[in-house]
Amino acid sequence: MRYLPLQLAATFCALTLTSNSFAQPLPDKDGQAEPATPVGSYRLTGVMETASRLLLEADGSYKWMMIVGGLDLYSEGQWTQTNGQVILGPHQFSDETPVFALGAKYSWGSEEKDAAYKMENIRLRNRAKWTCAFLEYGAQYSSSGDLAFPKDLPPQERFEAAVEIERERHGAYKKAIANYFNRDLQDDSDSAEIAARTARQHWREAVAFLADSGRAAGKTGEYQSPPLPADCLFLSDFTPFHAQNDDRPNVNWNDGVGIWVNRRERPNARLKIEAQFSFADGSQVSANSYELGFAFAPKTRNNQLQSITLTLRHNEKEYSSSFDIAPNNKAAVYEVKLDNRLFIKPPFEEFRLNIADDRLVPVDGSRGYYVKGN
Image (cartoon, rainbow, N blue to C red; front, side, top):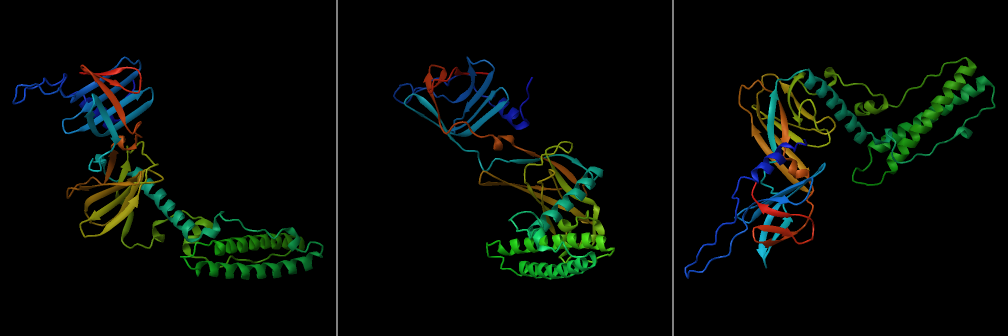
C-alpha cells in the first residue's frame, strides 16, 4: 500500500467529510425551485489505479487531488459555475495557510553537537569562498608554462635563478592580492579576481620549480605564501573549526537550540529554511538549514529561548511562521514539519467539468467522472 504525505492524507480525508448528495432545490418566494448546487465532496470513478477527490465549498473555494502511481497532484483555489459547467482554477495556494508546524522536540544531544560542528565549518568555508574567491577555480587564469624557467643551467645557477623567480612572483602575487581586496565591490568585473588567481598560479609554479632546483643542487629553498585574511585559510589550507577559534565570546558550542527539517533521523537538506532564534535577553541569532537539514544557534549560558521564526521562499513567494517557546522548557531542538502541498506543482491552470445529474464529467475527454460520496 502507498502512503500519502501527512498533510495530503489529512486533506484527502477531509474531502470525504461533507454532504454525499446534491442539496435539494429550494422554492423561492414565487414557488419556483432554485437550481441545485454542485457544492459537496466528489470521488473519481471509472479509472483504474487512480484516486482523485474534489471538494467544492459553498464559499467558492475548491480542493482537488489525484494520485496516479507514484505521482501526487494537488490544486486549490476558487471555482465558478456557468453554462452547466463547474470551472476549477486558477490554482492558488493560500499565503495564509500555515506552512510550518513544530513536531517532536529533544534536548541538545550528540546528533546536534555533530551537526553544529559540520554546519559551522560549512558556514566558514562558504564565507571564505565569498571573501577569497580567487582561491577557488572560477574565472580562468593563464599559466606561464615551463618555458618561463631556465632548465639548461648548472644546478647551482638554476637554483639561484629559481630563488629570484620565486621572489619576483611572490611580490607579484602579494600585489595582486592587495588589489583584489581593495577593489570596488560595486564593480561587476572579475578582472581583479582573475589577476589574483593568475598571480597565485604563477607563484605556485615558481615554488615547484624552486623545490625541484633545490633538490638538484642539494639546497633547501625557503618560501612562504603572502599573508591572507583568516577567512582565506579555510580554502588555502582548510582547518576544521574549533571552538577556541570563534570570535563570539561566552559561547558554548556543545549546547544550543535548533531545528531539524523533517525528522531528526532523516532531515531534508535541500530546503533553505531561515530560522531566527529569539532569546529572553533580546538577542537574536539567524541561521539556515541548507546543506544538512539542520539550523542552530549556539546557546549562551542561562539564556532562555523565547521564540523561533521560520521563513521559506518558494516560487517567488515567502512563507513565514513564528512559534513561542514555553519558558523553562528543557527542549532545545524541534522537528519542523512542512505542508507538502506547497511543493506539488498544480497540473492545470483551469479544469472544466460538465454537470450531468449527480456527476461531474471532465470536458477535456479524460476517462472517468466524479460522483458525490465517499
